[in-house]
Length: 158
Image 1 (cartoon, rainbow, N blue to C red):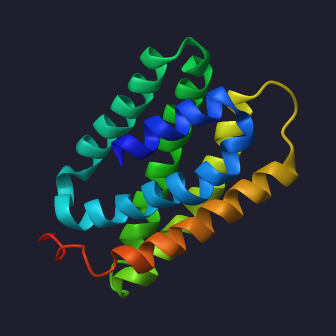
Image 2: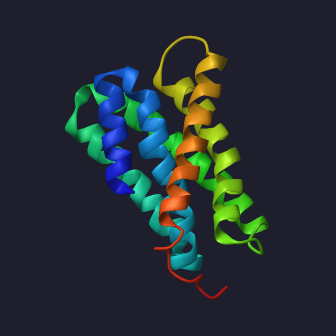
């Protein structure tokens, strides 16, 4: 998860055309990994995931001067998406894991796809970009949930 955040930030800062590939592969992985970690870390999840988000943004911020705006936008967007994911994931806890992961990924992807471009790229918000990013993140999250469903651990006690 940490690597996906840092790599996505650096690639987007170096060439914004990577944003859709990042959204599908790396951010889709991040959204789904959050749900795997939710079950593994239980109540400690907010602290640990918050530290991962800050570490990933910090790596990009320090590694490339051009990535600083993207790193800050990413940290804020990941934080907002993390809160959204946590709330939704908790509400659907009784469902099978693959459903929980994908249901919580949808609003999280939407929040991330609005907040990130607003902060990372100057100018008015392009709703075509927002919809494209959200769709890529949801699709990537669905792919990763299929790949990760058999490697996740059992839920932590509540």
